[in-house]
Image (cartoon, rainbow, N blue to C red):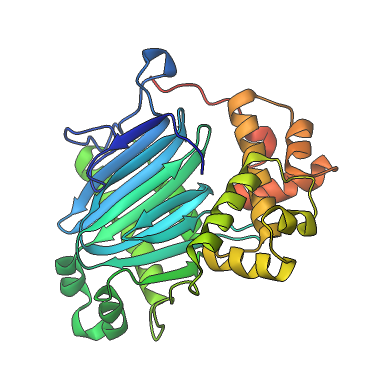
Length: 330
């Protein structure tokens, strides 16, 4: 597992790095690296939009490598990651979220019926663009009640998880929530709440008649550790030139076992994960180092920059040429 340069502990339901009141029209920004205390470059913000409805927004790059630990409060949680990748562990359940290597985006719902431990890990240079919502039991009961039996039943199963494929409209809504217009605080909250309700409708509609996602097939501790180590290898770039057979030999398993175990732990194939990892590294290089599109295409494993641009735009919604070095927020 990677070693992180810093560890940040807090209540996971509170704004990261901001313990005072949130200002909706002026989100919290972290100081530039020169200040000597920055953990993130960008916006990380938590706001209560209405009683029982909490919005968490992230559009930031990790500057140091962070481990954030805390306790999450009970509630039904919805997470939509439209850029980068996010690894969290809630109550012992690991979730890896982000754009899918095979194309498209996935959201995740998770029910938490009692306080649960929270762990989020990221590496230096990781970029995350996320909108997540937490709806407590009172909010759900007041708006759903007995008319939505499937939703209420899901919300009452501790640590149940349900992924769903995010629609193009939901992606557009998330982008609006990450980059809202400048409004008075009351109108800003109303703007965000209206869009949060739209996301909640899409997410909860996917629960109708659906059972919670079962836990990944039980693997031995050693097998899980191998898959975690393999993920670190894929993220490092050291496996970019390896075949699937060579990767399997690296973790001392057969190709079939590799595919089965990796999918059980991370919810995708090795090849798909590697493709996504390389594309994410290419975006980081564009944002952080200002490399050329041709060099970013090479990092992502594309010999043709045009094909790279197509894949990049499909994944992130913008062309590589539109990505520039992110200046520290003031």
